Each structure stands twice: as structure tokens, then as C-alpha cells.
Image (cartoon, rainbow, N blue to C red; front, side, top):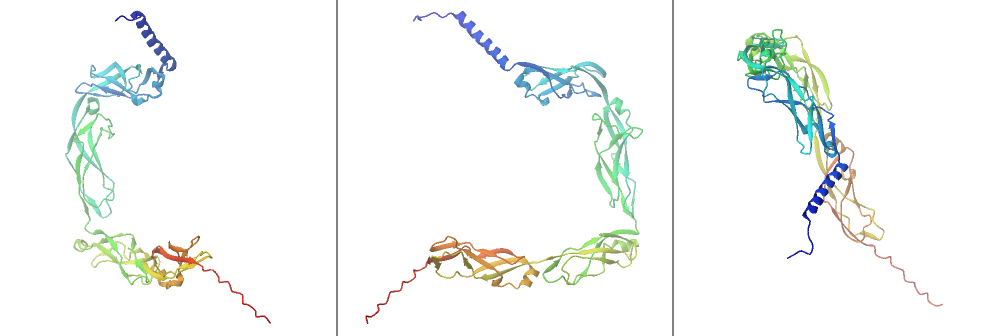
Length: 419
């Protein structure tokens, strides 16, 4: 079938190309492409380091120039870029003008370059060196204790790193604190590599194999001294309704002296009896110690400060209380008086003992505000004496029945007889 008109394919192609061109012109007018520099620098990663070589100087971060549409530039962050220095062709020593390539994770970025776009990279041959391990004990053991010579396992470590840095390494030092320690030390520690002057060689490319060593240091107690705890002893009982809390002793330990056999069986020192009879508040007393037989206190006649605290016991009591009906409208009346409710309260035992609670100490109210004749479930309101807590009210709610007040009878007039 022949079309009623003829299509000029050349003109169609020209129209399509012109439309696309006009679209990109309009897009560029509304969102023009721009070139800018990031406000922060990007760290440079060294990649493809040849085997047997290590990086001595880490390249400085670079500034990044970016070409992209304006809306793309607004969303870019330093995390959107990766700067890499390819060391695949580098050799030991200084390598000048190695190119830095910046890669963007945003596909809409047109062009990205580094400033500077090259860097000097120094590589050094990696080599091992065996170093002796020295244990450095820091501080003083507790009085009455002595320490023996420490040992390290292994006694030597292999340090691996740049040859220029490894050549300066003299020993691997393990610092172990024994300050006020009273038990033998047996633990795993990380050594630090130092030069001949004792200065630390801190470099991420310097590593020890194995990375840690086990240190054992014997610490023993001198035979004539022993540190033991203080155990307080009491007589009597606190006031009624109170319970005694654990006693606080200051100082909590003392040092005994004597022969080894006697000290071996001495694990604590008791105080002389502390009378806590009838106390109802905190008491602080200075109490002499009662040393074990065949031993002596380091300070003859030594005493400790003992703090005795008490806390009241909690007691519970239930009282039957007749409820009071309040806010009853004038046109209704109770069908019958509600039954008493059980009110359970709790509080400090001394307070409850002194109150001698009765129903007159409480007020249970049933608020009938706005209630007409009928059967109602009312939640009671309870007023308690000061210092008590309300545990429960039974029953709840309370059933209250109301009825209308009957009308007042109208008196009938009496006829007066005729005279």
C-alpha cells in the first residue's frame, strides 16, 4: 500500500540530532559543568610494592581537582576518592616522580587529577635481625615482699623491617610493673624495640616475631611478715525493728610479724568485741585489735575504725476500715452502708510499732459525685498516716447502691365542724 505522503529520512535524522543537541545545551545551561578543588586532602595509598621491599616514607596526602556537573560536585566527599601510587616499577632507594592516580567512586565525575600528581618514594630492603629480650621490672614490690630474677620465654625475638631501621635495633625490652605486687608474676607482654641508647624505634613497618613473650617473676613474702585481713566481732543486737548491716573496717588489713610457722596459720586478725546493743543509727568507734597468739602486730596496740550501720525492717499490717460516702446528691440515698474494706499498709517496723494502728487512723472515701440512683462500682480513695505505704485495698472496686429519696408526705387538711 502506498502512503499518501512521502517521508524524507534525511530530514528526520537531522531533526533527531538537533533535538539531542538542544537537550544537552539546555541541560548544560541548567546544570553547567565546573572544575573545582576539594576542600580537604586525600591520603595516598602505596600499591604493588615489590617483594622484599618496604616503604620508608609514606607519601603526603594530595589535593584533588574534580570536573563534574555542579549538582555532582555538591555531593562529593573525600571518601568518594582513592589516591594510589603504583610502586610496581620502583627499586630500593629513592624513586622520583612516581605518578599518583586518583580514582572516583562516583560515575558522574568527568575528570579527576591529583595535586601534586607525582611523589618521591623511598623503598628499603626488608631484612630480619635477632634481638635479645630484656625484662625491665618497674616499681617496688609491697613492703615485706622480695622479688627474684625474672625470665622471658623466648629469650630472643626476630625483628623484621627496613634494613636501615633494623640496623639500629639493639634489644627487645619488656616492661613489667611490680609496684606493690604481692604474688608471683606470670603473664604475656608485648616487647618494644629500642636502639643502643634505649630510645624506642616506633615504625609500623617494624614488627617482632613472635609479637609477645611470656615473663615470669617470682615474688615471695619475707618470712617474718604477713598481711592479713581484719575481722570485726560484735556483741548484742540493734534496737527492735532494725537489722545490722555489714561492718566497715578502716584499715581493712594489717601486717603481722612472727616466725614462719605461726604466721602460716594466721589468716585474719579479730577486733575486740564491738557492742551494738540497742543502736538505731550509724555508730563509729575506734576498736583495738586482738592479735593471734604467738604473733605480734607490726604496730603494738594498733586499732582500727569500725563503722556500724543499721537499717529498719519493713513490716506489713492489714486494718478493716468502714468507708465514708462523700458528695452524695440530695435526691438519692444509700440503700445500705457499704461493708468495711481491708487496707494493707507497709512501712518501717519501728514506725508501725509506735503507731498502734486502728481503723480511726485511716480514711477510706467513696466519691459519689454526680451519681444517680442505681448500683455503682466505686474505686476507694485512701488517706494514710504519714510514713506508711499503701500495699492493697480489698475489695476494689466497692459496690454502692443508691435509691431515690421518697417524696415528703403532704398533710391532709382536717375539716372543722360547724358551730
